[in-house]
Image (cartoon, rainbow, N blue to C red; front, side, top):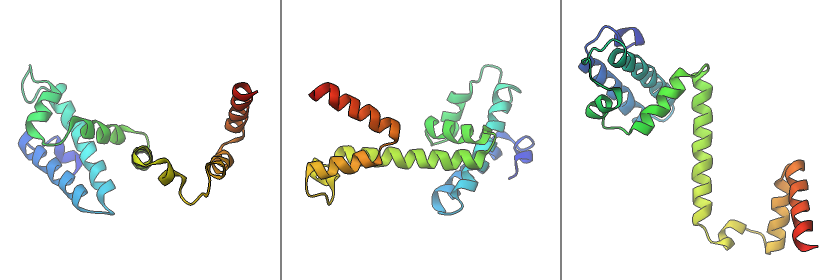
Length: 152
């Protein structure tokens, strides 16, 4: 279903088409970005039909209506709709994926013991020196000032 059909199909047909895109996104590896973006664009158009054109009724609110039709979280819908509205949706998807990967990485680090976080470093000092190497110049200056203040 193309975006143009979102405005001509019934609400139920549109819901089914969006659900199909989201399932396809979940099941496919390389094509998931395209399917999620298509579903996001369709959800944006559907939201307009519900809120602006009142096709589901005058007193129907978007998010309660969405919840009654879709088994996916509001958070996920908000995320893909935000990406669909972006000036460059493909870049927004890549940025969101990077952010998600970084959040998962940080979460995993929080669950590891200090020895696991240190990895192959033989000592805490060696590990700390490696971390300092990874700092930007400004971060390194801030770090050294804090060390000087705390231990001088």
